[in-house]
Length: 221
Image (cartoon, rainbow, N blue to C red; front, side):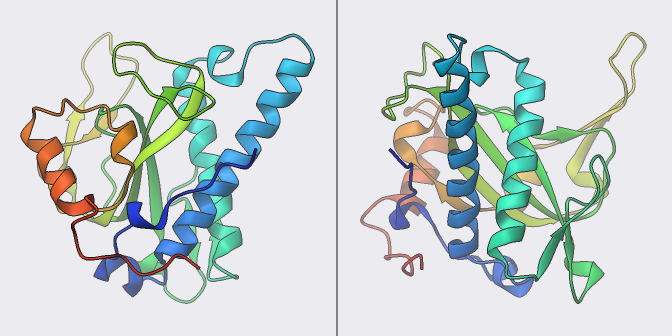
């Protein structure tokens, strides 16, 4: 069965619209990502193998999600954004204005997204969980199906990253810090998939933004 997103899980953001993105484009990009992941899973299962999330390392899974989401957004933008070359900053190239290029960062659960270097510019962050095929998610036990629970968008500066290059580390890392996450506006959140403790302040803030009692979002075309 084709996985879809719910219109009430999206919220508009001025910066998002300024660069030419929309909730409709993001919804299409997410559903494109789900469609291809499900196609891969079905092929693996038909051959007696485990699903993709149980087959490859999580870092590689995150990279794949980022690549698929980038392609989905590009296709949905009707030529406004194009895919950049693999492993090249930024991920999405704006057709008319290089200042509106967008970098995509992926993270598992409530981890802060990271890259190798602190790079200023527009960022779309995507955080996902591993749940069940029917959409159920248990914070205490990972499943093997990718479900995106949050998207954020905004403009990041160098100081929005914590840099690391310690001896014995796997290499340079630039993790989006708390100030960076705060600078990014939540534009999508599926609360039943949220891995954050319901007792936390962060969860209550998301509920305030995305609860059904909030102002209704525009319809996703």
